[in-house]
Each structure stands twice: as C-alpha cells, then as structure tokens.
Length: 143
Image (cartoon, rainbow, N blue to C red):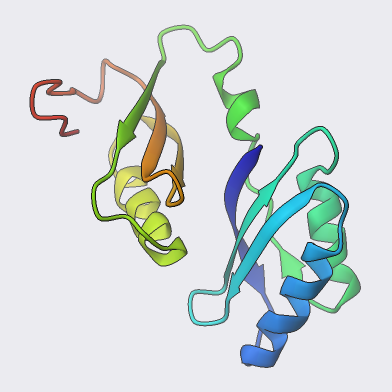
C-alpha cells in the first residue's frame, strides 16, 4: 500500500475538493483519499498493484482538474539506488494529513534528500537520502 501527497491544480472552492475526492475514491485500489482545498493537495492511500498514479491523475482530469505526478513511487525510488540510505522513523505528534505534509515538506528542504513519505496513521516517515550529504544522529534521532 502506497501513501502519497499529490498537488492538485484548478480547485476554486471546498466543493471542488469534494468532487475530486469522490472521483479518486471510486477507483479500484484506492483505500483512502483526502483532498485539501487550502493546500491544493490530495493525500491518497492506494494499492500500487491495482492502480497507478497515472490512473489517479486521469480520474482527477475527468472531473476537470489537474494532478501533478512527480517522480517515481517510493518503492521505485528505493530500487537499485547505490549509495542511498533508507530510514524509517517514528514522528511523535504527527496525527493528521496536514501534519504529514508539513513533515514531508520540511524534510525535503534538506540537501541530499531523495524521497520522503510520511504516514500519519502510523506516525512514521520513510526517507531515502544520500548519507554523504545528510548526517543522522542516531542517538537523538534527528536529521
């Protein structure tokens, strides 16, 4: 199961967010979709074996909006990456989709970060990074 935040373009109101959320939720393989008008994002939990990001984007496009698909999925990003480190940490206090997005955006600002996936349901963040550029203090669990 993948959980990703996608940027949505063209929303003008909360009703737009509801329409997009309904369209995404109807797709086979989508476990949960949360669309936020204020941040213009969609947090989508989906089965990568049943639905691809391109299918999600088409569902959004079919109702009149545009969803940005940036880069590979988290699973694809970890395949064959020599010199990269995968880290999964507990993030205390992350209890909503907004918190997860804030955590992801903050971590992405660090040089050497390749991919971040924050899961507020499990209060965890998975991070792929270049250990030559990002130093981890494992005792304090701080990047």
